[in-house]
Structures are given as structure tokens and as C-alpha cells.
Image (tube, rainbow, N blue to C red; front, side, top):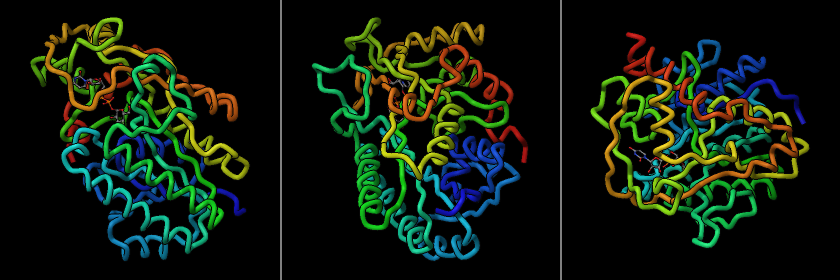
Length: 337
Ligand code: UFG
């Protein structure tokens, strides 16, 4: 197979995509970012990357992308609708649009002879049965998507399976648990923001009066939901590691987390220590669709590829996010362009 020089990153103006783009550039790759900027920010795309604004729903735009860049060797596919909650209200964005966009990309990529593909997948594939609630989730766990978002990602995983069988596509699906943290110049900037850590830090910045804890009657050590928080830079490194190993991989799915769970209350407590702000919290009702516990077992990628998260401590993760939010209180709009 051709050597690996030029990578297409769809969704490279988004949170995880832009940080992975930065890491790819640091590792010496040429990167083309394709993003429609519905959720991403042009300012997040590293200046060394070639930025193409376009939509995967637009087949002509996808064709033009490959016409202009016939030398793409691999694809990292981040572009997606990504909100679990929204997927319960607008399922077709996830069960149709995410799928069609991936199909448009795969159709063109395959026709052009691109043979390497990494999918941004999710822990939302797993919704644990009651008798296994406290197990760390490895790749052999039953797939029971928690929402149309997770189901849509699973559809794409299955599409990749058939592209492998039929066209010999080398692929891997990286199932992230709770991505969080930031680099000094790139971090989370969603509108609306729904994720716990940025919301908590917005309280510390005085932008919100309090954080609402979604339920404190779960079967966990303090009654609040337990999650596995993994730093975005550790996810970025996993992408590069897997892309570089794709030609020899036998495993196609990797669960990515720290393997340690923290409750919502523990996250708020850690943010209080990091920021020195009291961060008022009130308890509200449960959020529909939230499993009590989601903790990854990432033993497979550790064993096969030697992946080791550098940010194992929750406080260090929150500290990195705090630096970003403190210095960019309005996200990328703080850059004043
Ligand atoms: N939470 C609150 N209050 C808030 C926001 C969140 O209590 O204001 C709680 C949630 O109920 C949950 C935890 O904080 O228990 C984490 O919530 P996030 O919204 O930050 O993240 P999720 O676990 O819901 O979802 C994340 C990603 C999804 C991915 C999923 C996989 O956003 O894309 O992890 O587990 F599918």
C-alpha cells in the first residue's frame, strides 16, 4: 500500500477533529480539513492545514475535494451530528444524514483508491444491562445503542465492515467515552453547550449561576452518574497510532477511555479545587437516556498498540480545560476575528 503522507480530516474544524489535525501536523503529515462549519470554527483549523469548506451531503463538493486532492492516503472521519439528546428528538439527522454523509465520503474515497479510514465512534453503542452495570466495557460487550446517535454510528461501523470485505478498505472504529480537556489554543466551543465539564467551568467564569446535576438517585457511590473522562489529546494520539498501524491491524474496534469513572459530583468537586470557585450546584431530574455508569476497558489498544493515556488524572484534565475557558471565555469568538 502507498505510504502515508496526506490525511483528510472531515470535521477538522470541530473540537476533536481540530486537535487531531494539530497533532497530525506536528507529526509531519499534510492535512486537508473538510468541514461545513455548522458546528466547527474556521479559527480552530491549524493554519498549516488546507481548509476546504464543504458539506458531505453535497456529492459534487465531495467529488471536487478529491479532484483537488487526488493524493489523499487516509481519512479520519469526525464530521457528524454528535448530540445524544438531539438524536432523541431528531432521529433522522442521525439515522439518515450521518449515514448518507459517510456513504458519500466512502463512495468517492473508494473510487479514488483511498484504502485507510478511521471512524470517530462512540461509547453510546453500549447501554448496559442491569446485571453488568459496573463492568468496564470492552469491545466484546453487546452492542445496544443508547440512542439514534449511537445507532447511526453503529450503521457506519457496519458499512465499513462491508467496504473492508468488498473493497479491501483498512479501517478502524474508535469508540470514545467522555472526551474532554483542551490545548492552550484549542478547546470545546459548542453552541449550545451540553457537556458537563465546559458547563461547570462556565459557572466558574460567572457565565451561569449554577450547574444542574441531572439526578442523584442512580445506583452509584454518591447517586450521580459515573463516566470515564478521557483527554482529547489522548484521543488524538490514538488516531495517529491506529492510522499508522492500519495495514497490519486485525482489530477493527477500540474502546478509548481512562478505565476509571468519576461521578458528576466528583467532577464538580475537582473543578472547585482547580478554579477556586464555589461552583453552586443544584439537583434536577434525570436526563432521559443517561446510563448510570459508563467506564471503558481500553486493554485491547494498550496491549496491541501500546496506547497509554497521558492524562489519567481528572484534575489535570479539568485544569487543561480551565486554561482554555479562562483565556477564551467566549470560545473562538474571544480571538476577536
Ligand atoms: N450532566 C449533568 N448536568 C449537566 C450536563 C451533564 O449532570 O448540565 C451529567 C450527565 O447527566 C452525564 C454526565 O454529566 O451523567 C456527562 O454528561 P455529558 O453531557 O458531558 O456527556 P455524556 O456522557 O452524556 O455524552 C458523552 C458524549 C457523547 C457520547 C457519550 C458516550 O457527549 O457524544 O459521552 O458515553 F456518546
